[in-house]
Amino acid sequence: MRGLTAPFAATGEQVINMVAGSGRLAIFLGRLAREIPPGLRYVHLFFEQCVQIGLASLPLVLITSLFVGGVAALQSAYQFKGYVPLIYVGTVISKSVFIELGPVLTALVVGGRVGAALAAEIGTMRVTEQIDALETLAIRPMRYLVVPRFIAAIFMLPMLTVFANTIAVLGGMVVAVNRVGISSVTFQRGMKLLFDVNDIYGGLIKAFVFGAIIALSGCYYGFQTRGGAEGVGESTKKAVVASCVGILVLDYFLAEVIFQLLFGAR
Amino acid sequence: MIKIEGVHKSFGSLKVLEGVDLEIPTGENLVILGRSGSGKSVLLKHIIGLLSPDAGRVLVDETEVGSLGYNELAKLRRRFGMLFQMAALFDSMTVGENVGLALRERGGMKEVDIKEIVREKLAMVGLKGIEDKAPSDLSGGMRKRVGLARAIAMDPEYILYDEPTTGLDPVTAQQINVLIRSLQERLNITSIVVTHDMASANYVGDRMCLLYKGSILFDGTPEDIANSKDPVVYQFIRGEAQGPLTDGTADIEVHTPDPVGQEARHGE
Image (cartoon, rainbow over all chains, first blue to last red; front, side):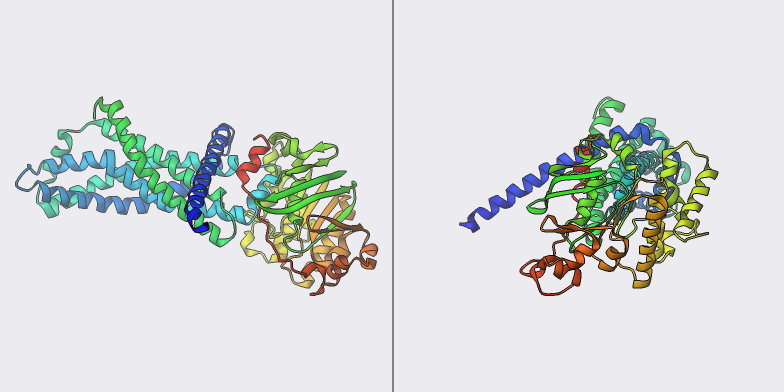
């Protein structure tokens, strides 16, 4: 009998956990929204986090962007050969980088690095009672810890994306010139051919939202940490998975909205 | 005066506190004894509003802690200092920043005055010239002393000590005991010390309570507890392996529950 009911019990438990988790997330978001205005006074913490989240991620973002641009040039040249004029290599690279590859790959790279770091840092503070200590000193952890990280992330992701876009296009051009055999002038003419500044704006809107997802995942799972080192590891894993999945899922919905708003059609 | 009236607390199916009643007059040095996992730290966290009781209430000078909104609770917490079991120093800050954090947050003070208070509080716990060190550079005993300096930085009326000597060698543990006692005498602070270290309890306590099975089993002076014939008290203070404390019972570690839910209950 117990064997028969076990699957129902397990399903029920999962549903309860999901509802409870949604409730916790809603409370977390509500409190964050309320703490943002007073939390803006922690300017020094905001700049510290800009360095941690933005500046420290820059080398990683630049290296990945360089190779993403390069491989995009190789792939497009391979697929165009014999069917599409190679001038369109520059067009394809700039369009795909500005609106999709730049913001999404930057967010995935930063999400892995920063999402994990935020969850581990806040999770360790939770299990070593540092968050309780903040409370006893009459300091609100949400205002002091989460707001500066959240604001820094939504501010730094678009900036990193601008660098990523630039380096990816340069990487694409270097590969196009040296490996595909088209001139830099042709590549640049291709870039200008169908250039639309809204491609860049659209990508930056995505980056802004992805910054929020990364900070929320890291901080939320950090706050939920229980136990010791194992709990911190579990929170870190959940934060990285949540930020990566969140970025890819929201990317689709953002694309729908951005294409409607900026380009007037899909 | 702190009054704890009929406090119950459970985490899931685990009942930790089952009707704790306790009065702590101003200026008293109370030691709360109990085995690991008996709920001592949980009780301490109720006093400062880190946890809310499922039933019952905690009153600080007739103000019910559980009924306070976050701003009122923050005001109340400024009257408290708390030393955590592992000191809970902020490892992203220097020692000086740790001790001065609450002063900076409160505002209204010049940086030079804050630095002077930090120096003074560190000197009170026997540490001079370590303001620029990182917590990771300190020994366990030094970390506890810095934690204590941080706890007294705001000149609190009450200090809560959560296992102040746990994890320290006997000499360092005694240094901490001497420090607690001297702070009690110099600053006339109400102290509540949670411990299972009888040597520490005998040194710092004017009154002792034993928490057992979720309620206060014993309440009396150090002499009373030493002469108690209660088999549980007798076994605990002598640290014997056999007896009612260990008959069919198991240690259960209690963890602080969901912080989001807790804070939400304070109306933040």
